[in-house]
Image 1 (cartoon, rainbow over the protein chains, first blue to last red):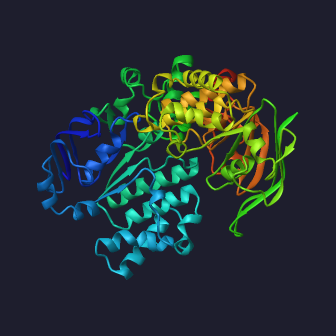
Image 2: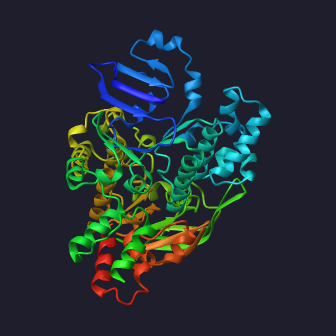
Image 3: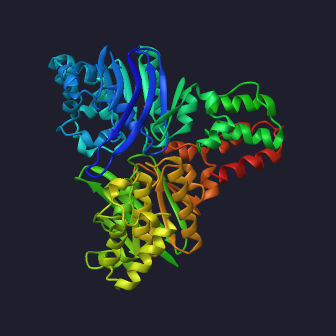
Length: 287
Length: 268
């Protein structure tokens, strides 16, 4: 296992009193290849805190996290003696507002900053930038532009290209599509899907969008008040009991499927996972 | 009577990027209008121009009959409140109470009335028990509710929501949508700027922007069904309407199912 959590808890320390328990007794394993995971939970449930443990930006206050063979515990001195830089290259983390972290005068310089920081030469870094700007759906002309004159969606793509250029083995994205328009969101999700399918990389996406969960994820993690309450496939997640107990929003596809079933008794043989599949499946039954 | 009148408005950033090209539109008093469009379509630029955060380079903006200018901008801001996308960037107070008070202090509302309004609108957004809390103690959705309470408390005649729900979780988004409905019921003019069709579906009229130009402006029902226009602006049909569209050519699809899908889409 590339990443393994063993009985991990994390407490934020406030100046005042006892602090705040953000993660409670988490056990979890993530493989280095072939996973497509979505991590969901209400605001404040601990999603970002969990993600930051995956590349040692945060270390547990109880329990152990193993990341590519490096063990992290509450012993800060021991943690510091380990080489954490390679972990941060191998597990790439895109923050929730990556656009705020653009700072160079051109998009090119911003993208090559990460790889160069991890010892990649100038020429190779530029090559990667040219490749990754296309991977995120922009063309090469963007490389010479100032990151500050880009729209929100474009900035987001540039910052994701910067992480991809570091060639991480595992890619973790904290709400990568929030604020993007529908086509922009779909295009970016296709990018992640392709990275996963073609390069076999493990992708972990933190999201509030249940449609993303239902259409793309192979595995879903649900956090509630810091505890991992579900670790399984998306089809098992949206049972009536879970939806009620955890106040989940139904993916649109399921919402329509269930509404049509309730109202007209229309039952589909398949479980459509995309808009297109739903329309095809309904067309066969209704048409 | 028009609350907002925009004529031939153009705006270019840094002399290069044309954000708005000759846009004309109006919003009637008490109307709820959605400005829909892709990222970079000029939606937010339009919002910033209406509240005087940017200066029009060409064209005019009138609010309640008064033309926006350096001289009138302060009066216009008393009429038009705006809620932005990122709740972290708009929390100006030390506590929730201070934050809601901020706008009221600028309006020089007497102290007694100020306290009354703060408590009333904190209750309205379910944040009354948080009045003495600091922003660190709040989630993004809660901060956004406080920002809205601050605007509501100013009792402006127009409220603009500039992608105010896009960073919230489903629960947070639903709450804000319910405030928008309440505002409409109270006769406040609402302008929502979004690319979320679930937000647009509830408004009276939709204006679709693409690359700084108006593609279509019409009753919401008509725009919601217009697959071609929406896709031109990087948007997509609400799924029930996409299904409806997909089944349309099948003659045997009964009318009841079609009507049901339409109703389903109106429920967001």
